[in-house]
View 1 (cartoon, rainbow, N blue to C red):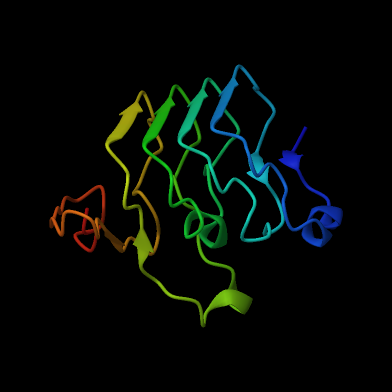
View 2 (cartoon, rainbow, N blue to C red; view 1 turned 90 degrees about the vertical axis):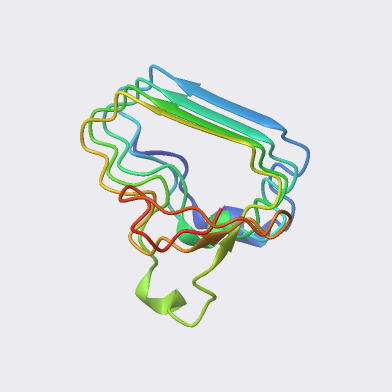
Length: 147
């Protein structure tokens, strides 16, 4: 299975998973991504927790276009994913005009464990914790991330 959501049919539904609060994906050894196509803004609108464990073929968890709509996200936990390069995938060329900044105003916990291929949070790491106005930088986050 390449992705959980992979059909463009989702793009015509404005409210895909509008009430989903937790998404736990575990032992999906052949899963490459959660979504292969951009989702509507209301998709995952109430998502608070995402946990991914032992999904060796996943290279990233989120599409860049998806993350900007995850305003309720509180916790991300990623572990034991052998080929995970980024948590947030590189921006698609056609979306170049969208805002580079990713705001995760309710984020409180980021756990990354046993990810031997992890390079950075995102190729375009620019995240700001707008609620607390905190600045946080590290090599993992490309020294551009504000959290």
